[in-house]
Image (cartoon, rainbow, N blue to C red; front, side):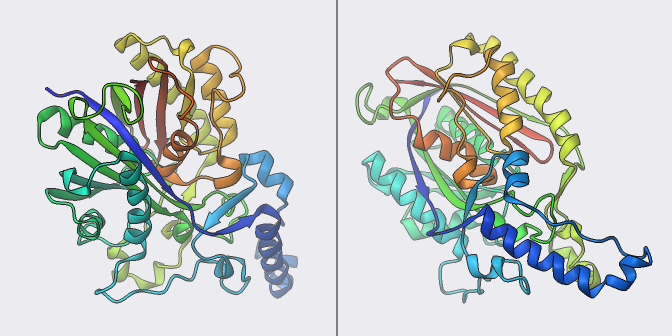
Amino acid sequence: MHQAVIAATGLHTPDQSISNTELVDAFNNYVERFNAANAAAIEAGEVQALAPSSPEFIEKASGIKSRFVIDKAGILDPDVMRPNIPERPNDQISVLAEIAVEAARQAIARWGKPASEIDAVICAASNMQRAYPAMAIEVQQALGIGGFAFDMNVACSSATFGIKTAADFIASGSARAVLMVNPEICSGHLNFRDRDSHFIFGDVATAVIVERADLAPPSGEGAGWEILGTRLKTQFSNNIRNNFGFLNRAAPEGVGAPDKLFVQEGRKVFREVVPMVSEMILEHATDIGVDPTGLKRMWLHQANINMNEMIGRRVLGRDPAPGENVIILDEYANTSSAGSIIAFHKTCDDFAAGETGLICSFGAGYSAGTVFVRKR
């Protein structure tokens, strides 16, 4: 059995960003048009008038101030209100693979070894561009990696499930190193006409290289992070759902229905997921002999600032000190599987050898994953 380490990470951020003010201006323009066009039906009680939004509402509800996106113009056009991402011919790299490759190249450069030493690629994400061929195999080809590759989707928990899978491949001897990528174009499945959720998501791509510990430097630069333990959990729930898929073609009249995009019962999710994740973290820490109150940093899934703050308090047994419970929601919004990896990537360089942290994700399914790490 081989010990696995997180050897390097990468982050690709789109060059376009939308502030809350810009998003609200577009949404409220749509609301005014809808209410004016349906004034008679609204007056008669046949149609529910739409309520406007505000930047203050969004920040209080979520902690989000802005988000990066692949296409800003389409989202902010009240006549469109979705990203305009043209289809590419099959002989060109797909947009999801393209951003995954950008993040992967950063990770490989930080790793300092050739891509040929990677034996497997996992594309772990919520928003797959197609059913097949696997996005991971396209990324594998673009980077000149041998071995094998496959896709996996566990919604917002995909990255921790991917790290666990990569660590298991390392442990069994199936691979020397595994590249795990999380390309998330979340704006493609978001209903920008829904006041309660139109602000939630952003677009991004992250990458993680998991390597055999005996092949990594034992200390110093490049030593990486020892994976102390990984744990996964799923529990079925309809409270976060997206019904879009290839079977929708059999009923084209339903393709535009709200449940073909992201839908959630936010209050139910909060009440049910916070205790589930908090208890899972504490139980996992106890089982592997880690004192949760001694964690230097927590890199949680960036779902909602109120959820993250409550989980942080329950795990640490107190209000987290500045920097202990990393929040990047304000700049990136919810980026599904990539959120905890962004947080880790941007705030892990100050760790000293022996200090511990937690990467944790949670989301639709319900699903949750914990990865305790220690700086080597």
